[in-house]
Length: 98
Image 1 (cartoon, one colour):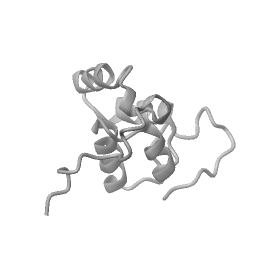
Image 2 (cartoon, helix red, strand yellow):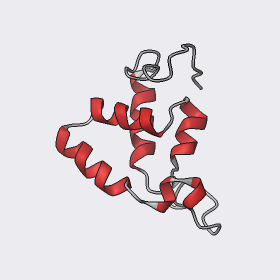
Image 3 (tube, one colour):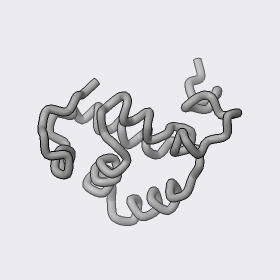
Image 4 (cartoon, helix red, strand yellow):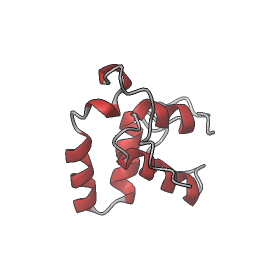
């Protein structure tokens, strides 16, 4: 888990310093997952929604970024406060097949 070390919250996560390629890959994966709320990404990696958007803009192709933004904009499952109480997990039960 990464914690913030800077004091300037506007520039704190404009870049991906401090994250490994594996971390960035996981953040992108979590951002694409419909049932993973932005709060889970923030709890795990310390990135709020705006920082995730900046990371996605930086690491995705422009077309992929636009598709992702269109997909997550207004999606209730991406925000804990908007979720139905029936959704109590951050992933599909068949996501991690064994």
